[in-house]
Length: 178
Image 1 (cartoon, rainbow, N blue to C red):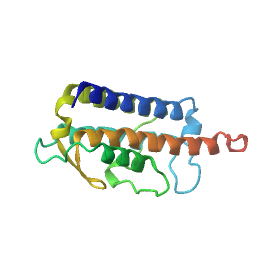
Image 2: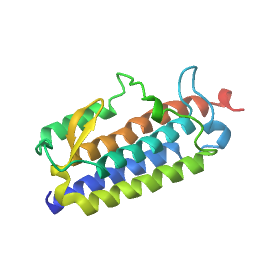
Image 3: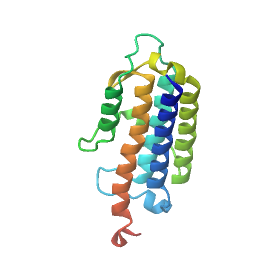
Image 4: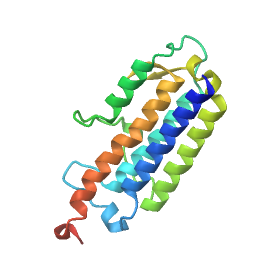
């Protein structure tokens, strides 16, 4: 991976981190725990899910095999980026990454997300030269190279930033205040 490409994926990860933190920040703990409707996650649950997935995705990258990786395909990367953030079709989270009360506060959950994202960015910076040679099997998207996996990682937090904005629109209405 060329230095400019490595810089680009790091910028995408940083931008999606900022978007996610902006979406989730500034809520009271009581607001963060309100489910916008039955069967939907609260903001805290969304942040817990994203923090958990971030750690999981990084683990997959750290264990990635440096063989049989899909080649660099900028169109595929763009398609994955668009597909991940598209909330038209809701996706069911696998059991291990569903909210389970791992964090007692929104601040704690955001700290865990940010720590995991920092490690992801450090990984991208340190391994950028060989990201296209890594193979990661994603249950929904199939065989990916390391850069594609990072694109999905960034897109996943952006997808849930939108979900958080939707939840905030409900919980911040004057009639929804506790």
